[in-house]
Image 1 (cartoon, helix red, strand yellow):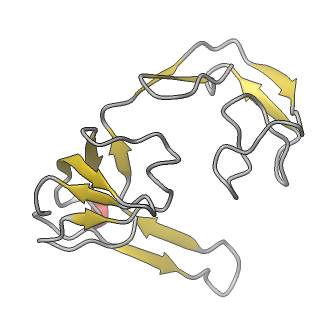
Image 2 (tube, rainbow, N blue to C red; image 1 turned 30 degrees about the vertical axis):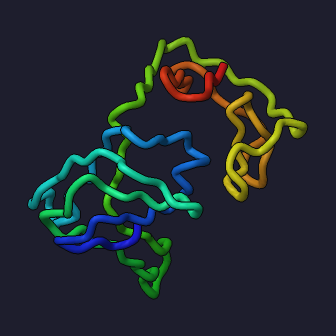
Amino acid sequence: ADPVRSGDEEMKLMHNAHLMGWRIGDRIGIASTEERANGYGEEFTIVGIDDKGSLLLDKPLQHDHAATFVPPPPHGNVPALMSAEVVNLSRNIVITGDDFKHVSCDPGLPESVAGEETSVLGCRCSSFRSQCTLGLHTAVMEGGSARIQ
């Protein structure tokens, strides 16, 4: 998410809320961005979603939630985007089993979110994936729009 400040009632997410299946009336939680997990998380209800997928919240934020880009250090590692986690509390995710198996990817599956190289219809081939591991990584979204099998 973009940074938000105390008093803000609108939030721009990294991904479009419409494409993620979020709806008006859904409850969301925003994690603290304070160092060492200090600070406060907050809970809201979505009262509007604009054409670009930004959220209008039911009340003003009580706390600042940072978002910043951290460049890589001079000797390796990778850059990082540090921002608050925003979770939809109205959607359920079930993680199942320890029955791991690898399945081949399918290059013909449609991309669920443009640029994400993923599909809700199965294991989609991408620039970084030639197979998927099923088992603990198999998720089922109930009350949402997808079932990954």
